[in-house]
Length: 200
Image 1: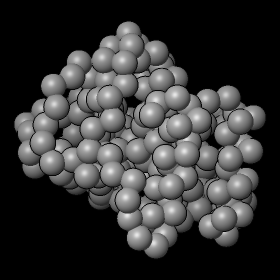
Image 2: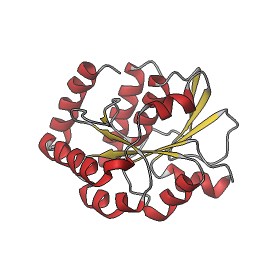
Image 3: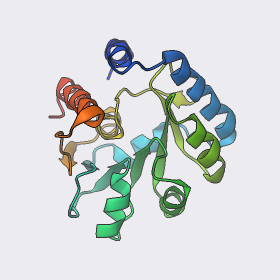
């Protein structure tokens, strides 16, 4: 997703939810400051995903899927490791799963993509010191190894990452866009973004 296109969507989302863009920027700076030498170059994602068939696993996952590469998104990681022994190749997170499980998959070769936004600053402060290496992302302006590939929820951001880094084919596995309240509104935006990107 081109940054200009993302920022048009992002401004709409910020208005829709009442998010503070300044707080998103602050979260990204904190992620950078705490992460320091832990921040990986984005090309580690290309090495994992380029020319591969990639399954992006969402929060409604109920069974494993066979695919060359697996990307889990957010809390789908918890369900995924409960139904299969396969560690995902990439995991996209805003840290809600907690340090223990993130450290476990990282130590077994999973590339973590850690996202900063205004609502997870305390989790960044708590969990990032526990991690070894990760790719850092923001939904505001990218800078100095803090990247912006586009995407709002962990799920649509994971699918966009697969596209950005040259996946041959992208399969959405365990995605359900139906929910109530705020979650439902977030999923509506996720679906819209995936449609704009031609992923669904």
